[in-house]
Image (tube, rainbow, N blue to C red; front, side):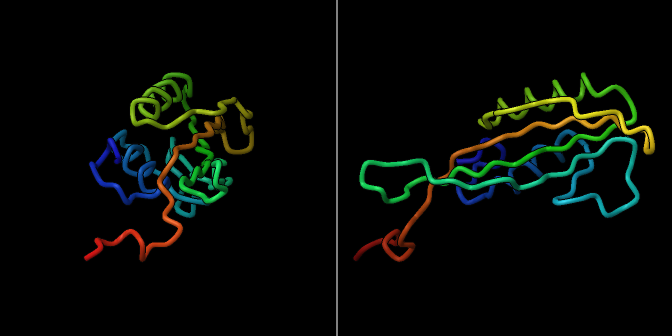
Length: 131
């Protein structure tokens, strides 16, 4: 169940967008297509895996997403706030690193990689209420 909404059917991207919108940071997936503001985030889906189980049937899905933070100001306070909010919302932060100062654009680039485990229903028809 999502700590953000109480829903059980959100994807990792949907949950991340909700969290980031609460922080009032502009966000897009894949790339920032609008004229970029002074601070923004880009969500980049990385991988999806099935943690192993004894019966070899997937029961969980574990997607990973990279949050690329771009800001023309100081990134440290914002990055720390973002990491804290991610952890409070049950995301696992698996990597975070400063990438570079982009002298041609004036942006600091900082990345945070996150993952979260979601239920995976192999046979959706089996999950309905049986009579």
